Length: 247
Image (cartoon, rainbow, N blue to C red; front, side, top):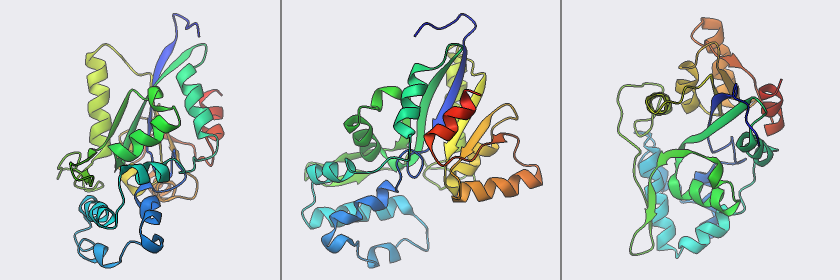
């Protein structure tokens, strides 16, 4: 693609679960458990503290105890469905338009193994400049281990292990220091943890909440209160987003 000298650069930030893939990857792997069910008592130890990352570590330990190893995870993750038209949208973002180019990142509360393998399997990993998520790796015994992305106590809208708004603003600042100025920020997400970054957007920016999901409802309330500046474009498919970007 030949890019015009006047070509502008926009940032596109994606959530992963229920935004790129049409499922929650953390619960999608429940099907690996005997009978496709994770024992309820695993969650009971963490629900009062609402520590999802610690809960997922226990899920991984349980799956390891019943014989689940890396290959089984990969076979499962390879079957995760995409939100309609999302692969096409990502390909279009990679190519840009005649007067616009995009830098694309993921900020997700999933983990690096789930996201990394899914993108690699579907040959989409090269599209993303950066993936911000909880680090995960297999230990010497073949058990999947997860760590918190960071520990935060400054944002009441976010979980303690990952503030998406902070990550997004930090990335933008680093790109600016490297000489890259974004003419517009685009953000696509579905959940309550996507509210923080959405509220950090300016009136020139766009937020794409998945239609009918928690973020969509939360943004409607914040728009009425005047807390939200960004333009809101609900989506059901990647094509909905692309039509806005090229209108």
